[in-house]
Amino acid sequence: MKESRESPSTPKVCIVITVGVSLDVLYPDFYPLAQGEGFEVVGVCASDRFVANVRRQGVRVIEVPMTRNFTPFRDVVCLWKLWRIFRAERFDLIHYSTPKASVLAAIAGRLAGGSRLLFTNRGLAYTGVTGVKRAMAKGCEKIAARLADKVIAISPSLKQLMVKEGLLDADKIEVFGAGSSKGVNLRTFRCDAAALERARTIRQTLGLSESDVVFGYAGRFTVEKGIVELLEAFEALAADRSDVHLMLVGEQDERAPLPASIQSLIKRNRRVHTLGRTDDMPGHLAAMDVCVLASYREGFGNVLIEAAAMERAVIASDIPGCRDAVKPGVTGLLVEPRSSASLVSAMRTLASDKPMRLEMGKNGRAWVEAEFDREKIWNWLLGVYGAMIRDSGKDADG
View 1 (tube, rainbow, N blue to C red):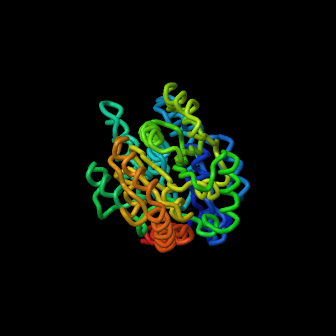
View 2: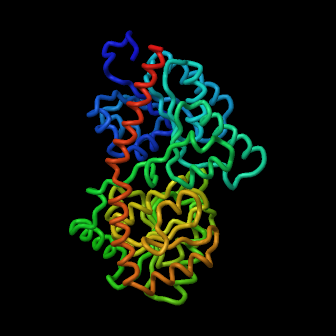
View 3: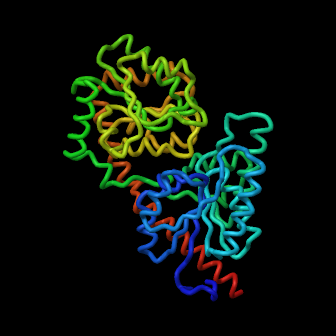
């Protein structure tokens, strides 16, 4: 620890992430636990309406105007601001994630010195991108990884992909257990009487009967989440069955909204029900019979294990990050990515077989309880914090 601090026994950790919404939603239940274990946690991110949620949890948040897009002049300004913050605050540990924040924090942290650097890779945003944009994005990922003292991948398949892409050697990347960035709060995501009652209310509000089969998606409305393939598959299924419905929970991605033709299709189909962002994800997942994530890329499909915790069967793309969140044939089905034909086949299977859906739901709950308990994941991460900070003290003594 640094002797100049007023409370040298209190380890000081900085969590750097590009935007405030990520500082909020990617660390649920974490800040009170960290504070209870004696850590001082400071957040650094761009300002948005979600920063207030983090501050209400007793976290000091320093706002730096980072952007998710490539903005050279602003990026240089943010790099300088981060360097000044790191020099002034003298954190024991800087934990960074998300692409833009990671490369800037890695460089600024090394230039400032005196802090251990921890990088959590939540997925490779450049996969599926070509040309100069891909080269630049991959270079930034490599910088963030190689400047870190420790690197965490949020799923085993993401770790494999990082090694395959030449970002880092396998022995330098850690994964906790079966993976996940934040696990599941098993008390909140529980299919109890209260959750089922909220689910019934949601279905009744949408005009759905108990016998209807509801497929659902929860997340950003954008092409890379497989929304187009999901809608194509649903329309093919709905042409054969009058009892199927599709529930879409979330909001348009402002950076990459759905094409106008797809938005029109959603509005035109009376069996496609769009709901906005919700504070009751357990209730909305319970209102579904099957949760679908046909994404093109993921670090880890957390909504899949949240649905499993609510005893719901799942369907997901067979890609890195999603395949870690499904036990094929046990908790759900994996389908070929970007294939509406493969997706509709899986949807037909589960729409026609209620006993299979129920069995997968029961299996999913047991699996999540065994592998993805949020409290265990956060305690592991705090253990990583403590070990890295202790190691920095040994290095200084040496």
